[in-house]
Image (cartoon, rainbow, N blue to C red; front, side, top):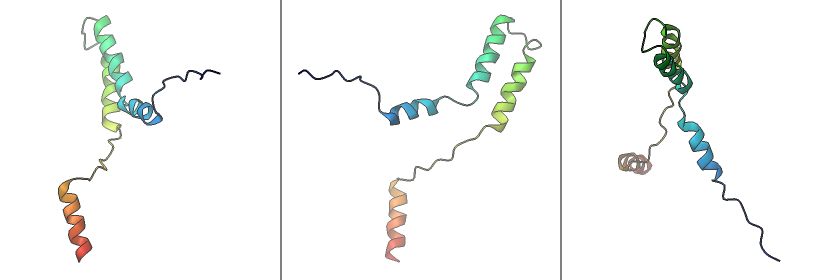
Amino acid sequence: MGRKKVLDLPKRSVIERLEKKQAECTPAMIALLDCFRTHAFSDDDCSGQMMVLQDCMKFRVIPKSTHKSTTMYHLIRLYHMRR
């Protein structure tokens, strides 16, 4: 009656954090760098990939920072609680 070996999978939060690290424009940037490599860094041949990357960078969603746990944040919170 031995114990079954459990797979050492990362926690769900770790997996979600790893998925979030990849930027939205990474595939477009990789395509542009690959085009530069194949066409000897010619701007004329890779203009399509440049436009795709520029559009992606222009319209990407920048997440707002929600982390507010600084010392000043807590001091202000305590000040408002005393009022």
